Length: 147
Image (cartoon, rainbow, N blue to C red; front, side):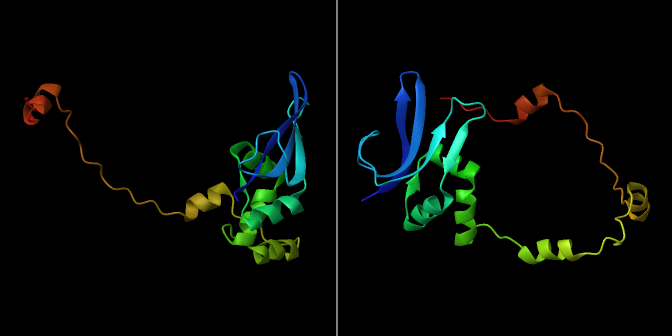
């Protein structure tokens, strides 16, 4: 059974509201679903995206495949990035974040732009002069294919 995460359309005519659900991939768009994990209202300003990240992460771990629209909503809610961190696809350095928080406030400032420019060494290589090529000479050099 292919499990998908997709949108089910609800609401009135020309006023859609969507539910984000986990469903068997063979069922119809507005058919029976396994579990509702969130909702999406595109007509509000700004759009409303409410997704239970714990449920979404659990279903992604079980192998549920999100549709393109649901994948964008999961990115907005943060569930997809959480899943990528758990799988090891995204590397998070927690020690670096902690060391920045523990630095004293009297830490030396980074060098200014002028100081960095004075310390930098620039190696300039001469650029070879290139003569412009005329189209006629290129056409003569390229063999033409005749059929």
